[in-house]
Amino acid sequence: MYAFTQSFIETNGVRLSVATQGAGPLVLLLHGFPETSYAWRHQLMGLSNAGFRAVAPDLRGFGLSDCPIEPGRYTTLDIIGDLVGIMDALGEKNAVVVGNDWGATIAWQAALLRPDRFRAVVALGVPMMGRAPISPSRIFPQTEQAWFYTHYFSQPGQAESELELDVAATLRKLYFWASGDAGPRDQKTPNPFGLVARQAGLLGALPEPASPPTWLDKADFDAFVRAYKASGFRGGLNYYRNLDRNWELQAAFNGLPVQTPALYLVGEYDTGLAIPGMREIIGDMRKLVPNLRDSQIIKRAGHWLQQEAPDLVNTAVIEFLRNL
Image (cartoon, rainbow, N blue to C red; front, side, top):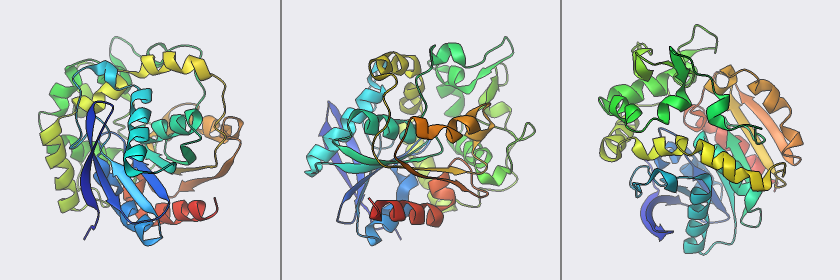
């Protein structure tokens, strides 16, 4: 069904797996956690059919790509360096960068720091946000009973032990409860990316879904399960373990706006919209992204937007690309 090809590129001391399809202007597709490049299977096909060269890497630490042992090798700058290396290996001078979840965070920073290489940006779910006055570890809430999921993910070994105990059950819960299948975001809706009870852990507070995600068939779900059984979750968790370090590095370009053309898409039921103040951040985003062409809310979709609403995402992205 899917016609993309898989190959490997060595750059910056790591070997990266990349999925490629089509010919034309380059579009880089950056996945989030817990995903792999396979999350972009619909966009690889759609962009290829529309006349673009679509490339989706397994970011370092994910899928078939190398997973460096040192947590410090997963800063945003490390990942942007990998993307530049991929473009160089492909003989491309620039690309439009598209990202979801962590991929969106990286896409924004890539366009901010290297507009000569990343000529436009599309972000799914995560808006462009200014540098906070204090570090993330001091901003995100924690009490004796619970802590924000980023604190939980930042503890070496703890999250890995829980998430890897039953990979299929982990992904089934995370994919369902962060998707539009979980319904509107309110305080009664289980949220895997909210507060985590210290005793129960992340998965203990998430009920077993009554049915599989409607947007993910068994073959595709099994592909993610195989990938995470092989790689584990440590690589992706190491991104969270660099939140404070990323914040420190961003001091050098604090206040700098993203000048490239941009598109922002978010699911109506995205978990991020449950975070206090997030809607206001999205509404004020043009202060940080003056060339934001459009901001769209995709009805009844959740956090895994490009998988949940592939046709709507493809239509919006291709229209944006054709008007650059």
